[in-house]
Image (tube, rainbow, N blue to C red; front, side, top):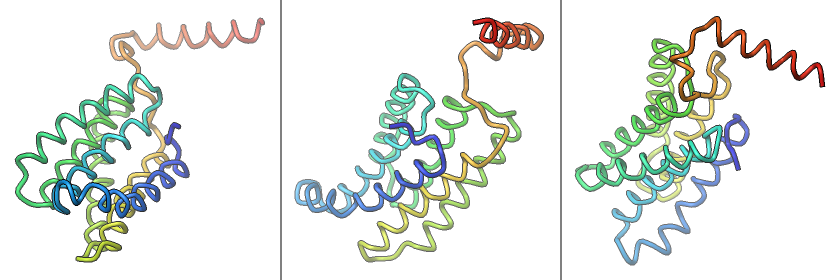
Length: 182
């Protein structure tokens, strides 16, 4: 299921938040609460990147990238806030670097705003209870859902950056006219 709309992304956020408790019940006896939570955050980050992708192929590629880099970061991070910031940056890089296209300055501004806003909201909701951890994860991903309300962002297409703008407009017009002729 593609979660590349606000509503679907928000539903993913709710499911990810609710999934913390069952995950910890199953995995914490094997790896401890600390290890199970860190592993869950890496897996959810990668799954979210795959879910918001405009295509399955691109989503799987970005998911694997986040999974590998996130796992490496989780292995060397010394505290949960470090891991959260690193995973948030990986999400931003995957979203605006691999999956979606916007002008560079706009992409950087949007990603900084979403990541900072998401981390601040998660920090506001976080606490020492399991419910607060669930709410913090939900809150962070909920803020990330706002990405789909922001205009001027389109699917990143390989090779589109090297095409002449006139040729690209010609191809779009030709495809539109061919569609009308059918």
